[in-house]
Amino acid sequence: MPVALLLVGAVALAAKANARWPTRLRFVREPSFFFSWVVIELAAWWLVLEATAFAGLAGAGGLRGLAGWAGAALIVVSWAALAGLIVVSARTSATLRAAGAPPGGTVRFPHSQVIFPFLLTHRRGVRRLRNIVFAEVDGQQLRLDVYLPNGGAAGPPRPGILQIHGGDWSFGDKRAEGIPLLGHLAASGWVGLAANYRLSPKVAFPAHLQDVKRAIAWYREHAAEFGADPDFLCVTGGSAGGHLATLAALTPNDPEYQPGFTDVDTRLRAAAVWYGVYDFTNRLGTWQPHEMRMLQRDVMQRTLADHPADFARASPLDRLRPDAPPFLVVHGDIDTLAPVAETRSFVSALRSVSRQPALYAELAGAQHAFDVFPSHRSARAAESAAGFLAGVHREYLAGLAGLAGQQAGAAAPPL
Image (tube, rainbow, N blue to C red):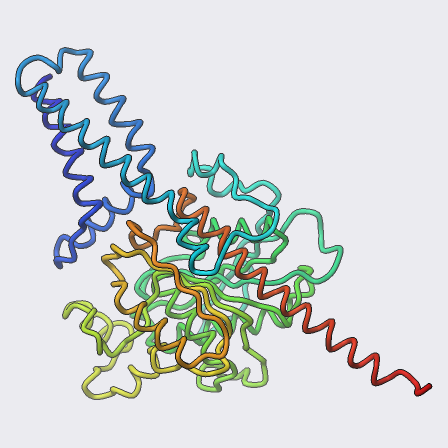
């Protein structure tokens, strides 16, 4: 048992070291990311599990001899490291407030889901309509889920939000990402959509973005059926989904991305994007060689050397515009899959061009995909995103009220 305790202590401490300093080395990057991610966002659960393991081993004689006491010391240091991760995560709200996105509204993220993240799909007051076909392209049906607040569609039209999943443009599903935010927004009175899109290597970019635009077009046509405002739709997404969400916000009504439906207005009111990808040209050198090979071979299905303009058009950094909608951009400072340097560059460039706010929150100690399940960090991020989006919606309603007042004044007969 002393040797077992020593081994447990060593593994526990190594996991915390990896959580704090994950690696981007090619062949270990993915496992390093995975264990970093789950340790950081489930730190409290790891503390419980390690304390249980320690109590069991110590009770079975694990504290005998030098090996046992060395193992105990390693576990204590591991607990201190876990406590540090928890403290850093607790600063999320302050970071988001400093960025200008404080929590909004009266709905708080339920503590039960943060404590027991396995309750992810059971947000009280929200219902989900699954697998609605929103388009059929080349014989493939594209489906989305609709998240609705309970209680029907009575009252004024609700704001809408479209969630786009990530997965290197080649895997992933609408059921796996963005659920904490969609559930929170639906509980706050929004209508949420989570849409699938065609994946590489079966299709090449821009097919992914065209499918996102098809989901927007579907919303325009069907929003009223769900009590939503067809003229008010925002977008959110993470990783590859963050890339597509950003491009969707920056390319309204671009006919290249609306084949067969160029008459549909695809403008979006705001974008809240997480740990996104903003540059396909690798001008900052943030992509590793094997990542660029994958991008060219599977996603773009052409080379950067031969088609630089295509890669630039696929890069949000090259699609900035003064009339871009308001943005909330969130990224973790130890993200090993989508380096934060690219996001900093994008936000800086967006702020220099856009007439609307571009809020940026860089979360200390956060990995890629931090919002997949309802950790403390993702709960606070969801609340702040809801506050940001609610502010955009209030401005929209105020603009409608002002326009209605002007029209009423113009229609009034002269005295």
